[in-house]
Amino acid sequence: MARYTDPVCRLCRREGAKLFLKGTRCYSKKCAFERRQAPPGQHGVRRRKVGDYGMQLREKQKIRRVYFVLERQFQGYFEKASSTPGVTGENLLRMLELRFDNVVYRMGFAASRPEARQLVGHAHFAVNGRVASIPSLQLKPGDKIEVRETHRTREPFKEAVEVIKSRQVPEWLSVDGAKLAGSVLTAPRRDQMPLDLNEQLVVEYYSR
Image 1 (cartoon, rainbow, N blue to C red):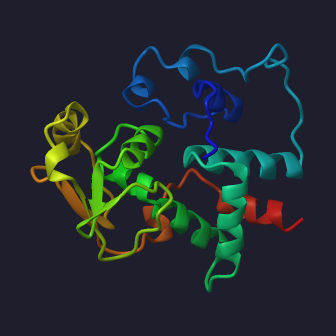
Image 2 (image 1 turned 180 degrees about the vertical axis):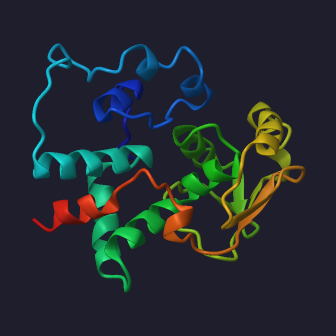
């Protein structure tokens, strides 16, 4: 399975915004974006006028990198979103939010989406009582997620118990930190999804 293996901090610098791909490091003084906000590369400090296409491209790349999905997979999400009844941009974000790895991150079981993807891939979780190890699995309202009983004493989940206490869980999810379990209550509304993402620019990008 293809995956991004280069330094992730350069992605934040390229998009000019924190994407929170390194977990707790992103909140510390070690954050590469805080220390050096210029785009990566020897010409990173150059300022260029960005046209409509450039803005659409950058927003598409930003959303893709926030959810840590590759280009072909992201395009597949868009095609499915455009064929689903409703607003295409909202459908796209909703599908990304309901990815298994993103839900694990939102619940506080992982410090970042890349970490959540790794934990899911290592089969630490069960969905509706069955072991699941596919990060892109689309969850739906009513699905129950839990850390497998034999894995709960492992270090990442000992830390997760404390993280869950301090993290604000989205309204469309419910989490029981003591049991390391949670469930999807409903599909997220637009106001319950990241407001700093402009999905309309992505729609315009693919509608060229």
